[in-house]
Image 1 (cartoon, rainbow, N blue to C red):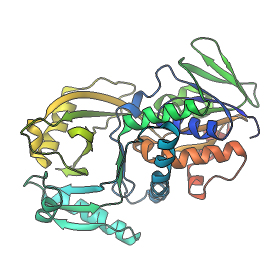
Image 2 (cartoon, helix red, strand yellow; image 1 turned 90 degrees about the vertical axis):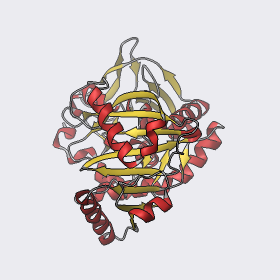
Image 3 (spheres, rainbow, N blue to C red; image 1 turned 45 degrees about the vertical axis):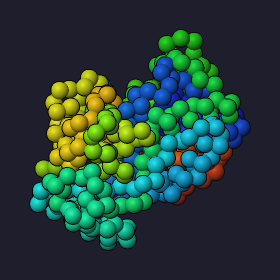
Length: 376
């Protein structure tokens, strides 16, 4: 694509990463979002964990995640230089722990699968896990150490991305996009809840709301609700873990991601309930119950926030990154649980598309053309 003007719909982690990279490369970028840095990106746990998220049958997603993780240190360093503030990357690593025998069997399955793929993980007993991470409680019977699965403080990252994008020349317009317009063959602009925006190149990064913006995306992106809690360490309480803790508790997944200053993010429930973003009593109860089984010291922490976000799910759990529908329409959405992780490789792929260059080979699996609807 040779047009130097780009309209990005959505200012979450994906939209702002793409906007920053495009503006820094010389494109004239307008970002449309009624509330930049909100939605699922604002309530994310921030895990950069392709290995510990992996499961048989999702090898393409694992490869995509690993490639993006390799790009994260440089992405963070360049973002910090561009924004003049931290990017929020945390490099302490991840542990995955299990409580009962059934949970340990599931972790054994994951470890064996990753071993066949040549991914290095270390199996540890419950005692070894507690030596590595003293915050873990006696119910932990064993687990895996995955030092290369990292994390990022999502809110620190979002603040840096907006500053970097604006410094590079991106213009933020705080209006809601209603539809991407076209003349039957190519994009002509975006209808908003105010004055429209004329544009021959539009990038849809609207997360769970992407499907309503153009008919070619109908049925390809759906909302998947996730609830999270934010805790704060209090004086006298046991110190929080130093690294991300992912756990299986009686078959239920739960995670705890540390933040600077003694903060801890606990998540995440998962439910397909449309666009419902209310926090439920049951969700809070389940998260606290399961997290306390693994990290008993959190009972003395302060509960400072509960929130729910809508992850953008796709039919096969791979994101949609590439052209779709009429000429000039690009999409970067459907990242589900992996928006933070996949931001660097997605932004690089979008910049390649804008320049008319080949996208990274590993991103080709995410081409929207794999779905027939995207060719309409």
